[in-house]
Length: 216
Length: 251
Image 1 (cartoon, one colour):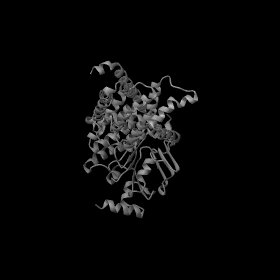
Image 2 (cartoon, chains in turn orange, brown):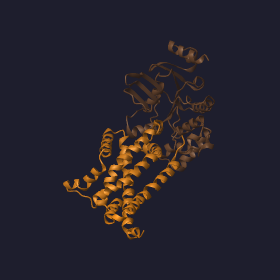
Image 3 (cartoon, chains in turn brown, purple):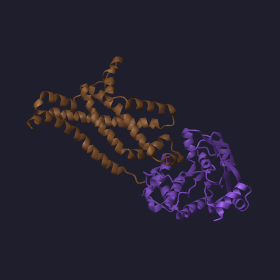
Image 4 (cartoon, rainbow over the protein chains, first blue to last red):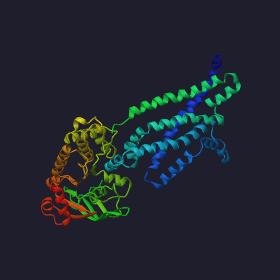
């Protein structure tokens, strides 16, 4: 156990890096995903087309390729991110927002069309109908699929390790290389790090699901 | 807002045509409705009567013809259409109360978001309207906790909260259990008595006799005949209307 104590600073920093990658990307992809889905259901055809294009591109591109592009690809056009961490958050957010948008879209499709009709009949415009009536009900039905997206995102942060971000997976590589005799312990520590993020959030999502459930 | 208090009709449909793909659901509809008039639209299912009702606030678009409300032509899209809709109350067959909002919030949403009425004023007015339709005790419940009849009365209160110029009722009692139909019809009858302009698509012939100024009979996407209820029910001119009435009035 002294091994864990010795390497505690490394493990702690790695855990915090993974946690902030997940939280920041989660927040940004929720925002971007909401914008995308609003475009996708809007009456304006070019917006719908643009959102559909975005979602299909990012949903069908491997995350590693997205990382590769943002870290090395854009250097070709003389662009770069201030840090690898920011590049990683961007890649994760761009990628995950496509899945958030699709989850939200399934929720919007589950809201009975009469709800939006009633809102429009009252004189609410498209944005108000979406904000006041459709999205609040859509969010409620998509808590479980959004939970899945979140857990996938938390694990996808590990791709950042391949691009010089010192997250949990990077710590795994580093510590296991240096301590081949403690391999099981290193693995256990890293896995626990991920579980600490994903397990409580699964419980939190279940709680959220019960809290926001609407009676029909 | 410019309210044109002309002597002209409040709702005017001229040469309205609509297709669902191949199906010609509305054929050359001409109809004008005066201020304070109560028009009941009846006809067999598939005759286009609900579609007609839904074109008046452009929940259904039309391919040909013109619809105007209070002298203003119905805009195609956007803010102008939203503004015009706010003057046209609509009550649906399936109530369509906002499932995630309480009864009180349902009635307050339009006034606060569209009319920019203060929360306090909107709440006061909402409570008055709920009192009037007899569901004030349910103000803090959610729609699913109410009976169908109560939900439909809330839907009427929600539409009235916008002080509409005209109210559209799209088969308001068709989804109700028989014992709840009258509580909704009573509210509608009292509205009619108070001079609200109403267009009512319904199968309730009793309501038509009691409250309508005019009965419009539709079949196959056309207005076959229009007359005052007394004339229509005792002496329909068209064969089609006689046939329809004999089927529904005999039992």
